[in-house]
Image 1 (cartoon, each protein chain N blue to C red):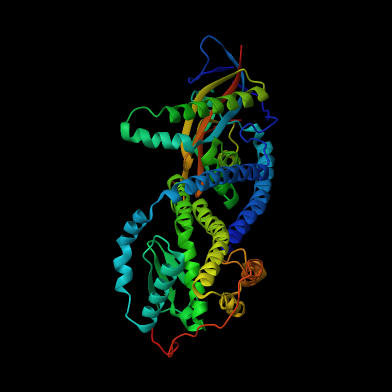
Image 2 (image 1 turned 180 degrees about the vertical axis):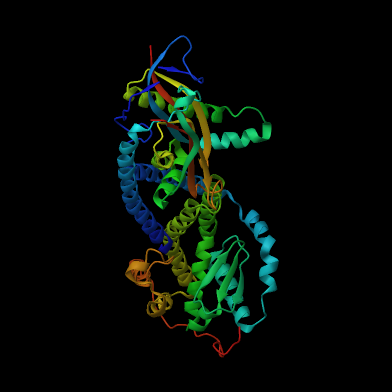
Length: 275
Length: 149
Length: 104
């Protein structure tokens, strides 16, 4: 066989495409799909959550109530918090929940609302509050979360999303991890609106129970020095900056004409108490 | 957030360095292919030369292992969602095979033709077959016919 | 373009050859096909989605090989061989190579 040496003009086996263009196209496509699913999920969750009855929620909570109660230790502060909760509930909030306060040892200046009406308050917060009004505001804020079923909303969306991504890409693929992180960011900013509404609820409850709103902003004025995340971190922090919350509450106080008066003190030996 | 930045840095490094490495490799491949243009590789088995003319017939082989950069791997995993041609891997396989062929021709020395050429591809490396390709190996082998002058 | 798997094109003579030509392609499935395949795993039977995917890949690989042969001035490809390998997870790579010749 005679051989004629020739070379092909072009490389048929490689498509002449710019990889950057493909990268942006695919990433944009993926983001588009994710955003669409997110919006649809948001609508779905908004439809479903109000229909979850408190009875069902209490039953679900009943599953892990025992593990929570096992860690409770009887203390004066826990009784005090419980009686304050019951007073706020009976006189003003009147939500369809049986609220129960649980105190936990931790330096976090925070309180958490768990399903079923269980409010966990950390000793870090208890040590910081200076008046009964301030504590009542914090408790009222948590009750506000229950009133709007906030604790169910955030959980629902994130859960479905992560399940879908785990099904499609596997649990330890890069895309799953990035999705989980992105979700944490967006779910946190979603909860900022919820936090503001919970603040408003707490203000109303405070006014209703005490007749005035002294102590409402005390708590936030204590945060700036230690926990304010600063300009850059504010997007990633779950709570809106304290000064925004303070000014928002002050606006409401002014527009609604709420009064200020003497704060009710906390019981003696509050800070010396062990729990 | 840190994770995302780290990931983007890896991707950019992969893209920049990978593209440079690929261009250099292709340039080298083109030069050598021109050099070896006189030595054809064919897949036919039959040998047309009469026995006296054949000095020797030897097995020659060449292999190359090419690895992927991070950018291309990420692109391929995105492609896995939407389907279609994984363009980022095409150049990888192409380079591996052409390199293997060239190395086989280099081993052939002053042969006239390499007959019954076969090319095999496989994936090796820790991550092979699990989460994408670690490295790709291409082997080309054939029989080099050295003829009497 | 005549393509054969044997050493010659029966009934024609080979005038000259141009060496090795090859065509390769690598295609990925998309999540839709994956889901259907997962479901089919329960029931059993032909995975039509994958069959179609591989068929298209094979067609594209052959087309590329023909294109390269045409660029060399050939009008037939003899002794064609195929090779498949799994290069990336979820992607099928198909490779076809043969000798490009001109027949009369």
